Image (tube, rainbow, N blue to C red; front, side, top):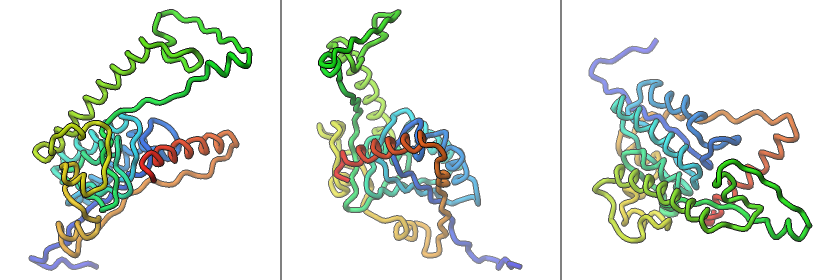
Amino acid sequence: MKLKIPFKKSAKRVAVLTLAGTIASGGRGALNDAGLGPLIDKAFSKGKPDAVALVINSPGGSPVQSALIASRIRRLADEKNIPVHAFVEDVAASGGYWLACAADDIWADGGSIVGSIGVISAGFGAQVLLERQGIERRVHTAGSSKSQLDPFVKENPADVKRLKSILDDMHGLFIDHVKARREGKLVMGEELFTGEFWLAGKAEALGLIDGQAHLVPKLKELYGDKVKLIRHSRKKPLLPRFGAQIVQDGLTALEERAEYARFGL
């Protein structure tokens, strides 16, 4: 039996939620709103936490999934009046930084990579390979723009212009999110929204983060030495049973490795 001692202050409780990996609507291990939703809800509700800490290690990915996850975090934080703190590990870049901005403050290790506030679209062109192999591609559409950016035909300048317009609009949404969440903290300059990324020291100077700190020492500083950390993490998926799934997981792992490699990780 646990007795309650009058006037004794109880230790503060902080829910710790790890957001690690690339951000995508599908794929085993990817961060997305459908997969993380129940875990985020639990972090904000179970045990009535005094705060929620986000441990972020992500090179980015889907801008829509980034926005959905960040919006869920902000909605719950505002509804329950719970402060949110973000702690960057290796990287919080692109969509990973979008997630970090869902917090009320952002902390990073001195070697953490932060930023990359931009939008990217990448692909391959294989039309020359098809021509050399004597393969003729036949595509029939209803709608003049239905087959735009087809990787098996020569790139059309008009298609590129349309894509650039979409990327610029998405970039604008990203910029608006960062400005709103980091209002009064950003040191505005030409380089801030170019897609450039920095180590924590320069990111702090630019106002992208609030300082350099690690999870446990900072939470003890904020909530006392006896603060209790309640960790929430996703369950690891069972081993795949089918060969096709193994191949798909291998491809997903390569794609994720490529995203981290963009930042020298």
